[in-house]
Amino acid sequence: MGIGGISTWQLIIVALIILMLFGTKRLRSIGGDLGDSIKGFRKAIKDDEKS
Image (cartoon, rainbow, N blue to C red; front, top):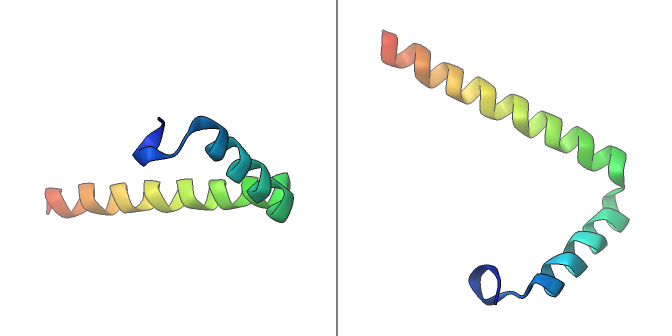
């Protein structure tokens, strides 16, 4: 069993379907945007704690 009762093969199949739907360039840009959002959120929390 994998995560939450989902097997490893099922996760691989879902990942392949997502890759086929969105493409690698689109996923890369989504990942970068998500990373920037998380960094901004962490910075805002850090700044708020200092105040």
